[in-house]
Image (tube, rainbow, N blue to C red; front, side, top):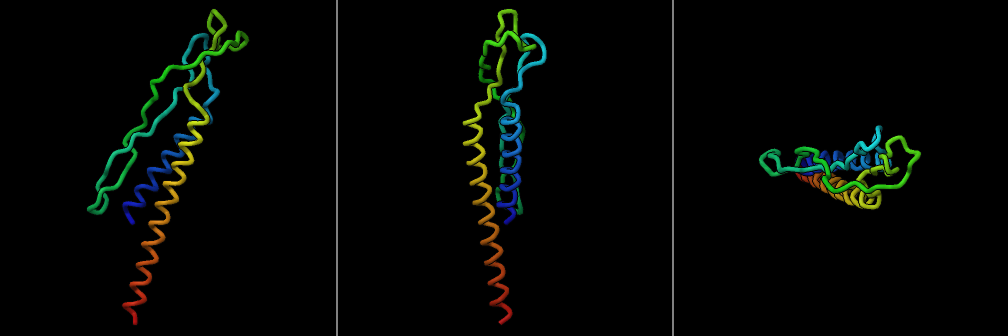
Length: 128
């Protein structure tokens, strides 16, 4: 159960990071030519959990892929040619990542519920 709980915490952190990416998908820089929001990526590592191997969020890395550019001379972040750097966040990819994290979270919840049911049945057997 402790391993599944560590996975729940990791997936919860992953969903928070994905939500931040989606929220900033249209965030441009504040000054002409400045960089916009850069997509964040969760990096996980193994951890010792009650003598077993669990998972934890090790750090949050930045996606180093290139920014896209959009012609919008009225934007305050536009460069001298009228182009604005847009974040390297693809809402479709973020949505798919969020769904995958939700499924992993649900799977670990099922593990905890099954383990709890098994413990309850063992107690029932021992009481008889």
